[in-house]
Image (tube, rainbow, N blue to C red; front, top):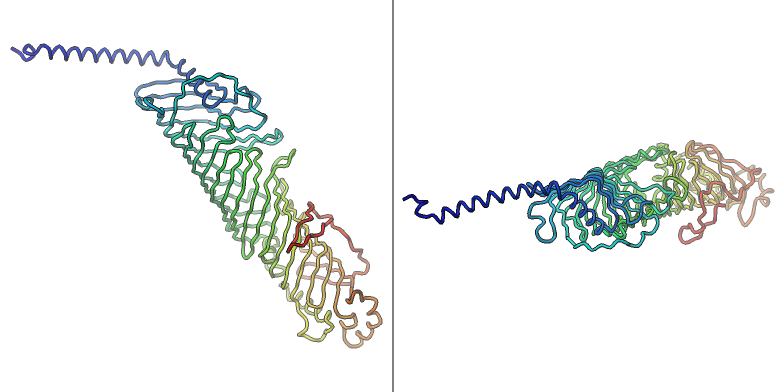
Length: 541
């Protein structure tokens, strides 16, 4: 007998199993076809309901397709998520097209695991206009935890809409975004690359985002590190240089804190034309509600000078663009460094240590930075020297005469002390209540210094320790003795003086006919508290 005949039970079992398997394959194929044809409308409704519950909003979905072989795959277009009941403001999320892929066993157990999600044309809009209405929809869906292993979005946007409708939205272009382990109730890691619009440059960042706050999206946490490379400052008229920056930021979308540093090896102000290496360290807060940035503080260094600035980059109601308002303090700096930035001359007007405090104001505009910049403050320069030999010789001669020793070559000194109030506007420095001193003499004056052509126009009172006759020798001294009393006041000789000409070729002369002005019209804004060493300054108006 054959083997099959000797074991009929085993042979029958094989046939039954084979037939059963074949039937299961046929049934599975029929079910797949039916699923493809019949289940997509149901799944679309289910997906919309799930998104409305999870994101606490109204959901629109144009197209939704799903298949289960060889893996679970979803494709959709026209996904729009709005704040519930709010059609008067932009959608919270809009996605032009999306795809998702999960393994057959990914939806067994909790959480559901989705291997890969790809989003195209995603725009996230965080809006602050008006209050959100109370939730009216009853949501009783079974909670299904969802975990996306990898999410990729290219050419996405994050749009922050300010409360003030007159202000334009703040748009952040995100060229490539990769997120891992994304879930609504957990933080997700991310890496993003984008181009900053102004100044243009490449930004790479990576960190943690979430968990998503559906009730208040602006309160969603964010934490990351960043690098900002090859930012071209030349887009701002009047300055140039290639800036790089690195640091970290964190907080919530409505209010982000930033700490970092910048390096600009070739920072140049057009009016000066001398490149310097500029280094800064800063701490700032970005207000996501209106896009304003507050600096607290910025520490900057170039050459041998150090600057500390506090303030903000803010938008004025009713105006386009942003303006910069800073309080600047300089306790350790060199006057030659400052002049190198602002003046084209090969050598500076003078050298020496300088201290100053000023209000810094740069209004929005398309013009040159040097033309728009306004300063208003006080300064102090001690133990300074003019670089021009001619000027030093004249100052030394003045010092000798003011001491009453016109012939003593060892008596005079050109070492200078200078201090007072200043205001910068339209490339012109206006000096007010300023004192210029050399040993034996001081000159209290007002006037202007033009940065563009270096023209001088100063008027004031020269005070000397010596009598007028003591500034001369011989017969001239004898002739001046009778007039000494007319120029003596408060134990000093006082003469009205004017200084004109240019930086390299100043002209000094008596100025009996000039009317002393009590104010200047160059003040950009008031600050009655700007002072050095705790002394309150006088207003320039």
